[in-house]
Length: 245
Figure 1 (cartoon, one colour):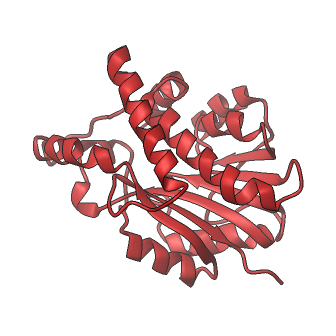
Figure 2 (cartoon, rainbow, N blue to C red):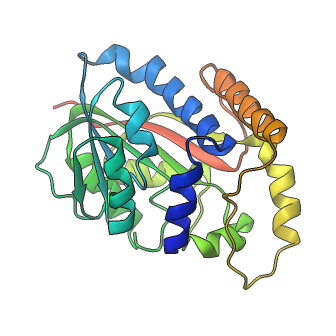
Figure 3 (cartoon, rainbow, N blue to C red):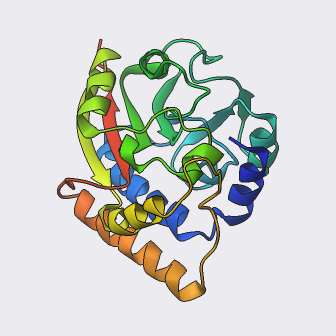
């Protein structure tokens, strides 16, 4: 990821409709399927925590540790006030069975993760038997655009491809769905109008009314995703479980 992207994310993730809406979707899945099945204050690793936005809301329910490879990300994440470690998702600096939950939001797609199945096996390794993995990745390689070049995307995913990778890592897939269905038409139009060589960030704050509307639409999807799945979307969300001993 270009260093300037960390600056933009740190400034905007607390207000930007994308981050707030996706947070609501992920928090809904955790509230419905994960927290009720665990003791209070479970141990949680946010693998690839970036600038620390998720650490803040996850810490309301769990004992959270953040991990990232980039020193600038960790510098920003320190503001969340949670324990941090530097390392890669392909070689986690933690013992086996260290966590009850691992979250990994928009990390596996990255060029710095050359083998995503190996990374998933590493995430599974640090989970206790019966522990939970909540994962989000971008969808569809045909949607690659200027933002993907900005954040160094290695690949984007399909539902079938992500499920196959989770199973290959020895995880039990409990929930798997696209998210951001309403975003697909504008994303397609935007990608078609972009240069094939330019790198440019999508992380900009729109006018307040647009920002509120975007968040509201994602929150509405979150309501639906707690009851059913979506056939397409800009992202994929997966909930998987480490097999019990």
